[in-house]
Amino acid sequence: MRVRRAIRRFRSLPGREKRLVLQAMAQVLVVRATLRVLPFALAVGLLNRWMGFRVRKPHPPERVEASVAAIERVARGLFPRNPCLTSAVAAHLLLRRNGEPATLRIGIRRGSEDRLEAHAWVELHGRIVVGGADSPSSYVALPALTASDGLARG
Image (tube, rainbow, N blue to C red; front, side):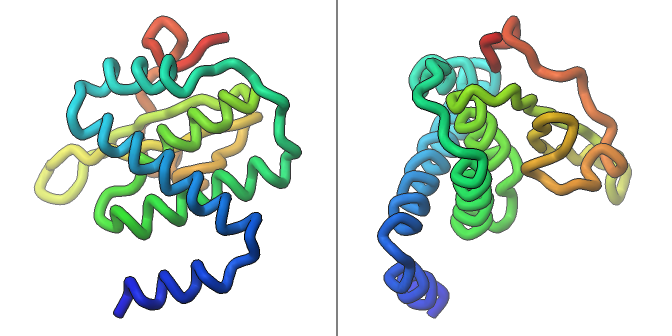
């Protein structure tokens, strides 16, 4: 039932939005698969090299925002129980590839039964664009991941 509804919704989209959703889906699936089979630092380093940070012709800000929103929607739809790391890494790669100085952040907090919980988000120009605006107040952010970590090239 849910799949049929998603297919109907997809078919009703204009061509440009269909391409955007398909690109987001491809990026989310590649990121998710890579994160599942490789250690985090190696996975993100490989994704950076594979997807490259060569800034192509930058997209207009509204297209970048639409792409990031599509990545979050697709990640939530495909992986409803734990989309934050996948969508944050995919959006981070997209933003950096577009020449934006995005920062991937990971935070932790003590959850129920004293278990540690983690969350990932992306910051851009001092605001959170992926992962929820309340992330820094709910989680203790680990040090920002930098180029030496294989996550970004300046």
